Image 1 (cartoon, rainbow, N blue to C red):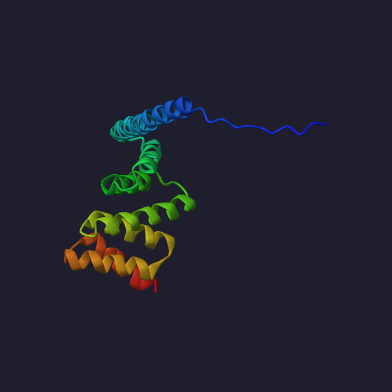
Image 2 (cartoon, one colour):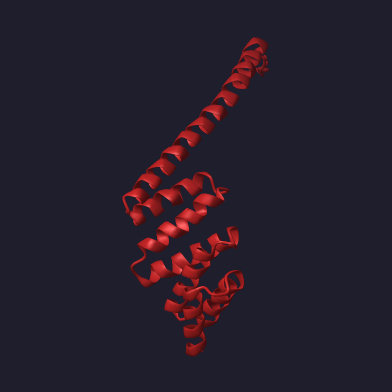
Length: 160
């Protein structure tokens, strides 16, 4: 057997052409992807708002959730998700999720009395009396004569 030596050759024209093509395709693909995500997010938000107007709270909450997967930093939609989901709750597992979403919403908008009030009512329904009282106290600190907060606070104190 003869010993053959393999000679490797670099095709410089092909390498430069490939690099130029990649330099054009990669940014274009990134911008196209960003554009598609933007269009999808807008469509999800529009659909959620439409379903909300039709009082289909469960479906609206689903679309808000999908929107937030694309735009997790949108605080206003996170609050709307909590409100829509809370209106669609029918069972105990849903109550737990509604409480979780309302806690997040209250964290984003601590001045919203309606969110805190509804959270305190759900906590009372779940038997979390100390947390319900704390939320009711927070509402009363913002608005001293709030009737719902006073009722929740009294019931939570009685249950404890």
